[in-house]
Length: 373
Image 1 (tube, helix red, strand yellow):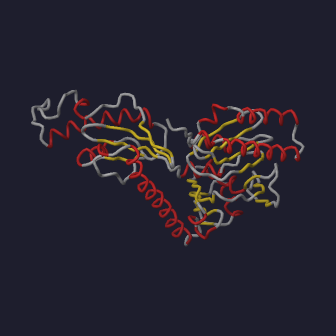
Image 2 (image 1 turned 180 degrees about the vertical axis):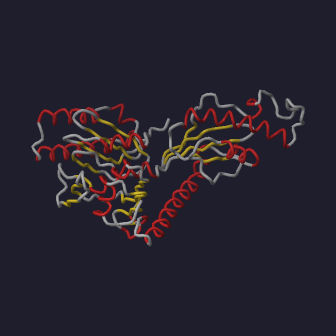
Image 3 (image 1 turned 45 degrees about the horizontal axis):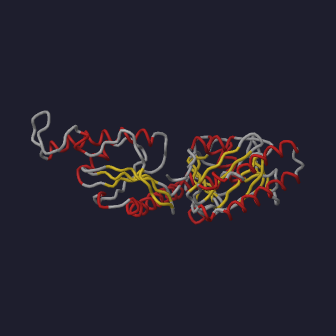
C-alpha cells in the first residue's frame, strides 16, 4: 500500500473556502523510511511552536489556542500516524478541525498562520502530482499499477477485473469460433478483445471514478487501439508504453511511465504559454499581482499560473480586489497570490502551481483573462 493522500479539486475548494480566526498551514518534508522519520517529527514540533508564537503575539483567544494546539500535539504524538509517511506532509488546522495529507511531492517545510489556509504549495500537488496509474494490458493478463515520485510502485486490487482476454469472454481459449460462427481470425479476435476491454473499463471505473490522476496505457497492437477507443476515463494520456507489459515488473513499468508524465506536463505548460502569447496581443493577459487580484475578484481569469515557491504577504479586498502589501508576514496577513488562486478557482478558472521558470516574464504569476483590460 502506498501512503499518499492526493487531495481532489473538490477537497482543495473546501480548504480554500475555509475561514476561521486562526488557520494554521504546515508543510513538512518527511520520508517513507519509518526509522528515519524522527527528524521530521522534531521539525513538525518546531513548526507548531512557531505558529503558536505568532498567535500569542496576536493575542489570540487562549481557550481557542489551547484547542488548536491540542489537536496538533495529538498528531505529533501519534506514533502510528508517523509510521506511514511519504515525501511531504501538509497539515491544515483550526480550533475546530484538522486535516493531513501525505504527499509524494517534495515540498519546502514552512508554517503559515492567517484567517485562511495557505494552499499555493498544495496547488503543485493538484497540478502535477508526479503520480499516475499504469494499466498493463495484454491478452494474457491485466494489472493496474499505482506509482508516485520516489516511492515503490504497487499493484492495485481492482474488484471484478478480468484475469485475461479468454476468461473475459467466458472461454478457456480465444482460438475457437465466436457465437456468430466466425472463425477467430482478426475480425473475431477484435470481438473478443472488445468484450475484454469493456470489462476492464467497467472494473476500472470502480477505482478511478472521481479521480484526476493520469492513466498510462501499456499495451500493443489491436488491444491497445481498442482500449483507447473504449476507455471512459477522461485522464488517459495520449502517449503509451508500446511494449508488451507482461515482460516488465511494476518498477520497470513506472520507469517507462515517468517520461510520458513529464512530456504530458511539459506539453500542457507549452500550450498555456503559447495561448498567453496570443492573448497578450489582445490585452487579455497580466503578470501584475494587483491587476490579477481585481480580475480574480470579478471572475475575469481564464487560466492562471502561480509560483509555488514564494509568498507575497498582504490582503485582498473582498469587494473590489484592491491589494494591500505588507512587509511582515504575521498571523493576520496571508499570501496574496494564494488568495488570487482561490478566487480564480472559485470562478471556474484553470489554475496551475508551477516553478518560476514556467511562468511568462518570470513573475509570481501570469494570468490569461476572459476579457481585455
